[in-house]
Image (cartoon, rainbow, N blue to C red; front, side, top):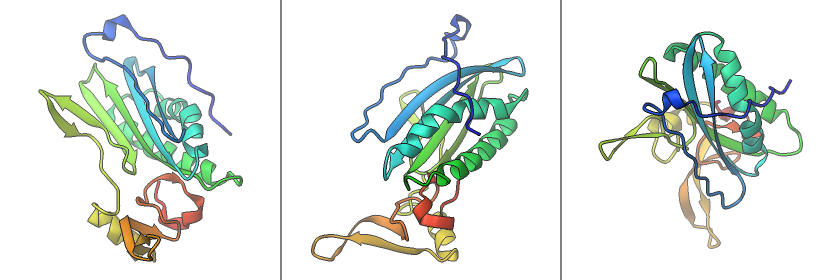
Length: 206
């Protein structure tokens, strides 16, 4: 069953010195979604920020926008530790992938990055699939908080999909010449870690 949507987030003034939340979203095709929510887990306040970069349609990212953070927070239970949040994220990602793939009216997919900031523990926990990235800006230096799973740049991912029988190739241009980034076939996606993409089959890893 679909998870209940998260309650409307509010900003707690006690967190002002520690966490600032703002949002800007430019979506050219209506496939990209971002949102944030705040929750008290085990007596500690945690801010969750999510980016879903949809492809092949907006259905997957729209579902994630509506349901994912509420499900993540519920799955965390009463344990706000980084280890518990990583486990909750992994479980929720896998369940969301199954739910999206069960939708028969589309084959859309989405990358997904969720960052959880626990000021009480001075912990940042990130879970992600795909190439929607999270950065921490410290002294004007960008520190990556997520892994880029694009096949073009990730040798481990190329090995994983070829070991599963996937074929790696670039798309062809109008002259029949290879162009653009490396993609996995069937499906033709540039990253094989995502939620949805039912047409890619078992090569997709959530």
